[in-house]
Image 1 (tube, protein in one colour):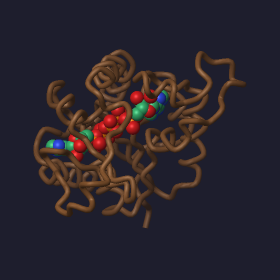
Image 2 (cartoon, helix red, strand yellow):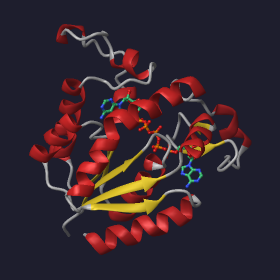
Image 3 (tube, protein in one colour):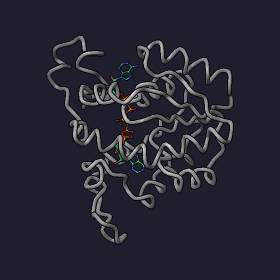
Length: 211
Ligand code: AP5
């Protein structure tokens, strides 16, 4: 079976991670996520690259983008090793989009659409299970087991001030990437405002129709 190569775009909090986990399972593809890869390497020493800060974490905790040289290398390696993938968190600017063109072809480009205040509400209420990596929300999707609830953590960049900065960075850098795929006629818009199950039904049908 030829596995699909899927790109999922959307603002911070649009539900990329939530839907990517379902895509990876249902279509048996790799979930390639720059956010998780960078969080696992927050303290990596990149001071020899002559950049403004010496670790990825210093960019992330300010809501800024990690420099392209670091992120491009992560994605290039991950895609070369994957037999089918859902790519989440990349490309985030036009330079990264050009790099991606050279790395691989895509079968589907999904774009999850969600309004700004809903994004802020989702991100500030997000909690993560450090043991399983599962994503929860204090209101929309709380865990059922008290043992799970007691170990949940909040991401360092999910306080409201940093969330607003991430959204500003998204509008400035990543919206042009969305327009780029729109102009190429390959962008598949999905309404991301429904429940996770409703969004999943649309995501699944769109991938099945396009791949
Ligand atoms: P990254 O980890 O990629 O964060 P992000 O793009 O800001 O996206 P999020 O993970 O915050 O949101 P999501 O869309 O996955 O939403 P989720 O499914 O969790 O990047 C973090 C940082 O790393 C960046 O700021 C940057 O510094 C750096 N970085 C990463 N990639 C980079 C790159 N390419 N270049 C440079 N720097 C890079 O859902 C959010 C919440 O909503 C959850 O609580 C969930 O339960 C809830 N939810 C989800 N769907 C629904 C729904 N349908 N209804 C109700 N609630 C929902």
